[in-house]
Length: 150
Image 1: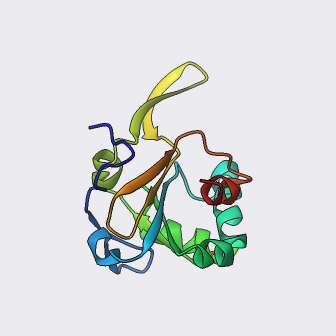
Image 2: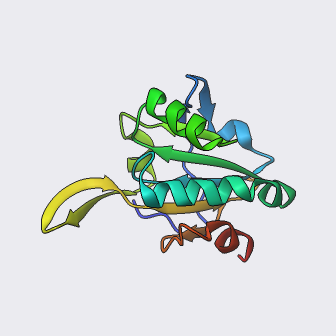
């Protein structure tokens, strides 16, 4: 189901890089940057994660908690976080429940070959669990500005 601004963000429960269960509904009262990305430690995903991490104080000042989601496992997330000093949680959606719930598991194409993968998409969620914006054309090097300019 395609989500839109004004929709209630679908609740989910998924494990972070340390095996801790994170439930979206437990974050009520906080604004959330829920960003979906294709793969740990690839150029675009690294640029995006580092931009968010470098600007984390500004995002936190605006009231946001940042959570990244990919289909990589916990061990991959731990390496990615350690390598780049990331200071936010990455969810290991290995069963693809969350990417499917948010309708970002899409058919993609590279070099003429079709495959399924995560469409880079960010959902901004308010304190009441309502989607206030959806960023589908993500600028990986200036993603924080896209979020704060909304």
